[in-house]
Amino acid sequence: MTLKELFSKRRTRYMKEMMKYGRLIFNDHFVLLLFLLVGAGGLAYSDYLDTLTQGMMQPRLLVGVIFYIITSTGSTTLLLEPADQIFLLPKEEDFKEVFKGLVSRSFIESLLSVGLVTILSFPIFVSTIQAQPIDMLFIFLALASLKGLNALFQLMPFFEMNQSQRPKYQAVLSIVKLIALIALLFIHVKVTAILLTIFGFIIWTQFSR
Image (cartoon, rainbow, N blue to C red):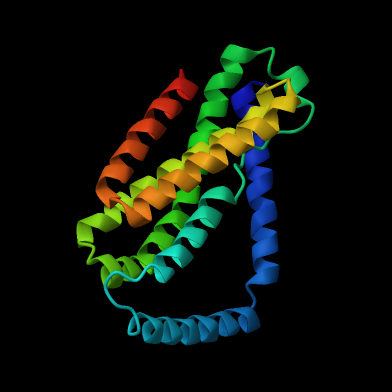
């Protein structure tokens, strides 16, 4: 069995498990409750936006917390098992191609939540800093770059044998995200997004080599 066939079978099994859990969670009662919560939340959010004025910092601080959470949470679906580090990593060349595909697919799937948060939070930017529609794209690019960096960090324990370095990398990543979000929210949206996108592209390119 080739590595591609192995991971194809793992993904099929994973999707079957997700569908099974989905049927259990998304029953009629849950869907009805979800619609009610979305409606009530949308009305409350609309009323909150009416209270915002130009230059207010508190709403952007709240958005910053949400951005930090969304770029720091979630897991990369690699379909890896503990024994893979012993039995698959020696096949580095074959494994690398499969691995890059898994990481890319998982990252693309995670962009759905990033896009949703961008759309929902953008009215706050409009109300507080008179953001233009094009700025939504830049905010999305910035968050996607931070999400990608977080995903790559999650992969390090799989390849990094020296686990003592993990806290140091965690601290560096947290500082980078904090500085990036402060610049995005309070300094300049477009410039920050462009710099983050370039930086993220460089890191991702190095990973893909």
